[in-house]
Image (cartoon, rainbow, N blue to C red):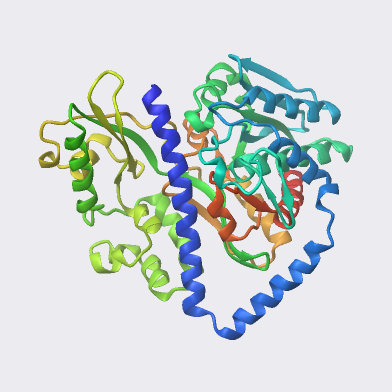
Length: 477
């Protein structure tokens, strides 16, 4: 279990970075190929106008920014920080707003927190976020202390601002505004903050679903992280994705007495590459690409995705897709690290990215041929969480989309399938709860490159606008 949670944590970090890098890369390539010099000048003018707006805004006086800055100043990194301190910070905010918090302490520094607002109708809206964040691996690369919540307009810097304290604050402020309005919510609201997400969620979401089932008995929908907004600026949104499904993830470990043998196998895997056979179009991916294809500016991407079955047998066309899109149509095996085993020998830790419905062992036989593993012991674990996506036909999906369009008319809004990312949505879905990954923030694609890395930052204009969108969305639900 210790290996599995560590493996999942490293996978999620690398997967998030890879996903956002791919999105940024595809966006920038499209701009270079399609946009003219004139449009580039217009974009510069838009950015200059926005810069003028930012320059005269006192961000530190914004109530939501103050809350975010305070949360970022609490070190909740999963290794040496304190989830308990983060939960206590949130509990204090709830008490100030007149909302009763329930804090459950698990061990010295682990904790979960929840609060309930009773509504008029049955069916609760669950607003979920995780308290813990990734550790600081290279502090010397930070321009500002990672737990200072430093503001350099128009950005706020801090570990976890993307993953996922900004969304946590948006949820919190939305609940507080609803309470302050004096109106009773249409639906009950369960505000849920869990720990240990970065290390497998054993004491977080999985614990809550197992030990506090009564909290979710009347849940209508769960909103958590995983939404993907592709934007070149606040006025140019390429795709606003509401996450409804994701790949399965299974840990794999290869063991051998000699490090050199596993290093050789790792190199062989790299040389072999990911498969160009056994491609498949599953239902949830078909749903995603049917909405996503028309938003691609590059004709080769757009044409390929509009008729995906036609290219599944055409390796040349398939290779033209960026890697995060190729991952939608196949199982993949990704080596993570080669480490010394405390019990002796060495182990190569890997992760299987599986299309929902795939058999882990059958996939591994294809991706790790027997001729590569001579003399090596290989073990594969079972995927965790729920495997079926949430139907975008759920009424909550329509309300989310309408709320976005009310504030961003004309934005391309649709379902999003996460091909390289595992979130706690899988555990909620595994418990039979309709779940969507929803982000209310329009931020520059380039800023997302800092997620879980040095100088993680978020643009405050996008954050403040997103808080307003979250509040309106909660009212609409």
